Image (tube, rainbow, N blue to C red):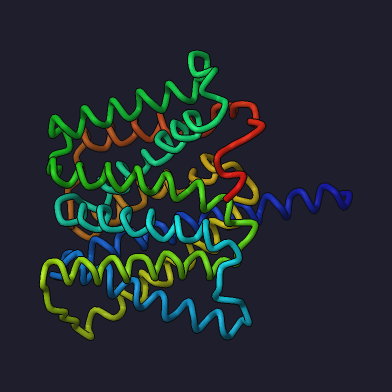
Length: 307
């Protein structure tokens, strides 16, 4: 066995390991947000405690590792701050109305939305009639929108779907800037910006609603698991963004949808429903088809070039 073959196998093994860790981190992250909501925490409390704990951990780890906590490109990170804040508000709010697995499935529409945004904001818009990824993305959104509006998901609530769809728009925008930041910022800066964003947005929401904070020390484990999952997602996502284009880097998160679904079933938080499972499988298949479809030619200029 020559050296090149060994290096190739080692690289593939590393990528497989990262993929599996992303699936686990994403599953725990989504599930813990739902669990926090189930334990009686309001959206503002959910956001503030998650953001505060993870920001504290991120700063401590940064200091221990000797990493800078100041972003190199403040303009891009400021945009991420606002897109992350709005996305997290709508995303966290949707957990009040929907199950974790339903949100995880709807959340994977970030990929179709992302591809549509890229097509509309680059010179690919001149080739939309022949762009298979674009039209697959459009029809996937239409199909899922129809399913959501007609209550085919038995645990669905129109308000929850509305929040989930709004969060997807902001999440898709955030991925574009996340991809651009992956080669410029250290992973803890990226995580800390997100944490600071949900902390501040949660605090503003708390003031608007005139709520008071409550925290049960027994829930510390759930918040810590959420924080570790978030940092893990960012650390692993940076690697994926360096290896793949934006949409292909999202493939492990699509797979994680089923992990979350079966976690809920095993914990007795939902019953197995064949109709819902088959719909989830069909939608996931459509999204995987979009991801694995040969990518469109690289554009000469994109709106991210100057960020």
